[in-house]
Length: 344
Image 1 (cartoon, helix red, strand yellow):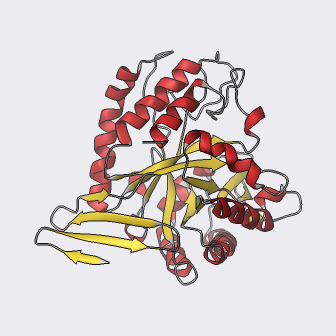
Image 2 (cartoon, helix red, strand yellow; image 1 turned 30 degrees about the vertical axis):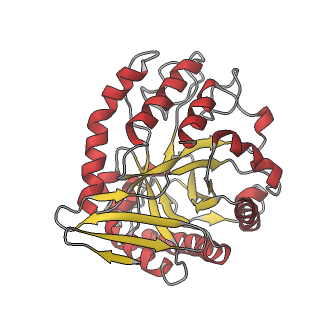
């Protein structure tokens, strides 16, 4: 549906089970995301088929989206991407992913399919690099097969959004044409929305945002060096990043989406959220404050599409809790904050 006014164009794109709408100002490219927020979670894969009962507890936080993550594996400095092999958990392979998607959609959740490559030896794909053109071409062939496999599953399963990659700091800078060609190929088989999950310190270096529907960011921004910063302190710390994100989204005419966000339930959790927490004391209030400040900063902004918290375990009754240092807010003080904001 297109409605033309003198000053702006209202565009509404309707899919089978989701509505995305925005107001795009023609002069300064200001963009507003007008539909309900993406109130999402990144689901933890299981070694068995995901059941409807595994997702019922998402009602406790008023979620409306889930991200399903099919992992693949590379090795440091080696040109290969391996996926769907027998040593992977069932929930990480094609059959398990298709089952999880169907289960989520049967209940009524919208789905983002979010392929993620784990680099053996490093873990994080941000440092992955190759040195020869021959190796790059081999890796790109493997990666294309990986993504196109899940693009086909996404299309046949009615998935609303597909993320084409996660946190490839160097690959997106060194091989921009590959990503543009990949996006074109994906669009021949998949008709839903596309994004990419850039690391918080790397989104400005992605050269293909204009080919996608959302600017996706894994939002682990460092905010405070305090042990337990207050919500007010964190709100102030967010302001420069908020302004930068708004201006960046406006410059591309795209809504900003947090493909991942979250904090561990430990002291100093907003200093460097990506760091391990084994040497830190548990602090439920620090995690709760960090979630509250993030939501207050972004969730009422029309240019901001929402996000997917990291992460949510299907076995809710045994997940998280006050003795747990991990990212999940399950059965912690932060869960109430999530529920409040996801319920608005």
